[in-house]
Image 1: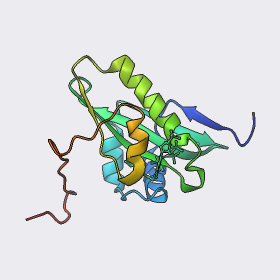
Image 2: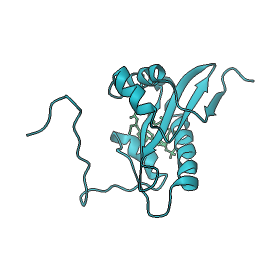
Image 3: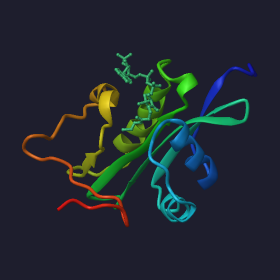
Length: 143
Ligand SMILES: CC(C)(COP(=O)(O)OP(=O)(O)OC[C@H]1O[C@@H](n2cnc3c(N)ncnc32)[C@H](O)[C@@H]1OP(=O)(O)O)[C@@H](O)C(=O)NCCC(=O)NCCS
């Protein structure tokens, strides 16, 4: 096999790899405890693997019936802009098409320009009718 080939694998990285890749991609850090508890509840996840190293990931979480959420989409910076994010989303989209029941709500929070990627898979912005609201546990909260 070509050593430069990037394979899409039908499983999500372990907690340590997940934590490292999030930070490498510029996403917020997660504690080991948060990662271990959270990843155990993944409905479906994929990894992009190059020469044994994980260079991309994405997963679906939710209640597996009414609500599905796409999270942790990340591609290592040295592989961005080469269609790898699209590969991850295509795999998650195929799984959702096969597994999400009619009427289920499929959502995600798009950071910055990543929304261009999600538009390609049929996601539409919910604002102004609905906006996402959030805080980070044990971090600063709004008023
Ligand atoms: C967002 C991210 C996953 C996209 O992965 P990628 O491999 O760079 O994206 P791709 O090369 O597959 O691009 C897919 C499409 O989205 C568009 N796109 C992706 N990122 C973009 C950006 N920053 N600005 C404009 N368009 C962008 C591409 O132009 C491309 O469009 P096309 O289908 O017309 O060619 C990746 O840049 C990343 O990991 N970013 C840091 C972490 C992050 O922000 N994750 C998303 C959290 S919501």
